[in-house]
Amino acid sequence: MTTDTATAARFADIAGFFTEETRQASDRFAAAFAQTADTVRLGSSDEAITADMPDPLAMQLGVELMVTTLFDLLRDTRLEALSERLAWGLVHSFHRLADQLDGEADRAARQVGQLIRESDGGEIATANLEEAQALCHGLDEAREAIACMRDHGADLFRVETGRPWSAPRGTLVSSKRTASVIAATDFLAARRNRRNEALAPQGPVVIFSGGQQWEDHAQLWERLDQIKARVPSMLLATTAQTKGCDAIAAAWAASRKVKLIAFTLNHRLGQRAGFARNEALLGLKPVEAIVCEGSGIQSNLARLVREARVPAHFFTLAGQQRRTG
Image (cartoon, rainbow, N blue to C red; front, side, top):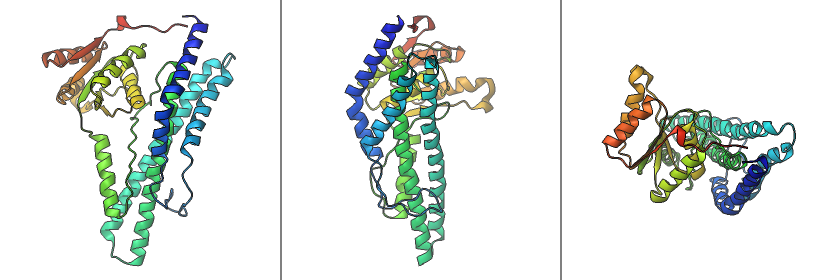
């Protein structure tokens, strides 16, 4: 593929992204930037915040402007080769902030729980509980907004570069709540249920594993899209590697809003850790499997999948379409 053709293809992808996915993105931003309480806090010593949430459409367009402008300004200059790294860092900044807010919200939730246990029903205890709940509520709300910006930025990164954006660690999971919370005990219960669902979701499982060296993400995304068309409520379980095939699958899951179960290694099992993880994946009773050529771990998983008669899709290194131009 020549450079001109590659550039034209990128522009076509970007145009298709804006025409086909803008409505879906607008719906996601509307949900993520919805106000879930009249008053919130973002810090324990901060004043209560009564201002409105930012306009969802303005935030969506702002993210698009930030990411695409990086590429537009550097295109056809000697710094063009750095545009991908800059854009990756921009999306990663959203990802890191969302992670930080998530941790702060967890600490705030624990504080709410402690105040509930210690409450004597007095005015001071009630005021402290309301402030702590407002902090947890505000941090949860902010985290969902920033995570939505990250997810949209990741989509734009993909259409600009032709490669999926993936986080160096962790997952891309957004879990926007839609119900208002009144009582602190109900708030904590609802929050706990949402987190449990995010960490242990229910639904038909598709398992995925592959090596750390892989170039052709398009063929994997195409096959995953085909499976999702057949199994709309699918969950994706991967072997949790941070590069190569598993990173490509994680980026696909984030783009398609599919919940991801990342199976990490139990290093206490030593050399058997990878094989034990394969057995755990089969224990999920998967409805389909994708295995890409990699190490002996993938060979073992392919054998287990065949023995269990799980409908499977196998990809080899030699079968990749390598990018040129």
